Image 1 (cartoon, rainbow, N blue to C red):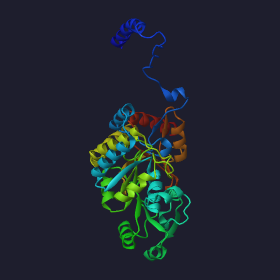
Image 2: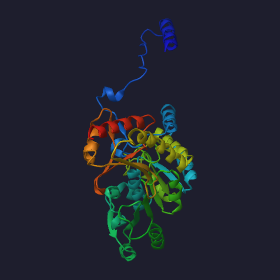
Image 3: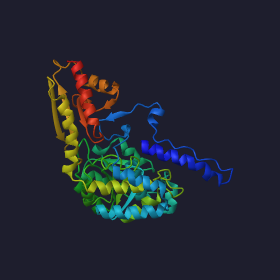
Image 4: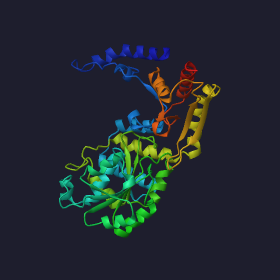
Length: 403
């Protein structure tokens, strides 16, 4: 710091001479603060995210490589269409897809992909949406696959047609059918498995769209998803892939991706004109995928286990407390730490525990599953090194205070 101040002092003695040679009307440059705590300035209370990469908590922590790449893109300008072409080509080659595009999140990918299947690049139909007069607008979806985000399918004007059996699908397909939609994973299972659903769509000549937004990490699951052969599929960029929070991926058939791109920014009068992707998000999404594909499942799990080991070390000797780490089942491979206690020893409800963590300074957020008996779990996905130690101390303090 002393050396830095000496340099700055020397510069201030030179600046008046330099300024005297410039036009007298030129204003001196404003001093740039060395560091600002923006959240504190805004009166916001930071928290430690031990819950996971939820949207309400700002998604995942971007990898350092992504932050560096995005900072580069803020200072260096290129034409957006050319950047998107180059990034899309690289991403498609990385995952083995015919084509790719970066979107402003997985939900935006669903909107643009659905609009693409409805209009197939017809300029007049594109400008007509969400008015669907004369446009194929029906999207077939399994009843068990109805979920919160299927509203995105209706943004360009699509109508959802629920099915449960293969015969239902055959009966539903007509000249108004634009697309068949598949959700992966689901909480309720499938009446028609993914491979059979895809094959049935091919037989009937209907494009398929798979929402695989939550099937990462690992990043390699994107490659596996492409191999399943859906015509379009999407991923969230700011969660399991640890890219920009407001970015996502749409992958699939070259013609449908081309149509989807025409439905989005910077094209005017398109249904997705407001779904802009910045230059830094294009680059950030590419680097997030590149980096993620270089990290093995073992490395990812080992890093998270190290975070949990520090928490376990802090509270593992508490009487009546039980701890268990486990890897989630399904497509995404996440490591979680389950915490429970004997209510006769620790007189605290699970909700009370969550509330106490939330009220602490620093505040801590964890997972609470009311539908499974109120289980409480921790995720290390968003925790940084050092935060695990802090979380362990806070949990110990709260549990001991109620013992």
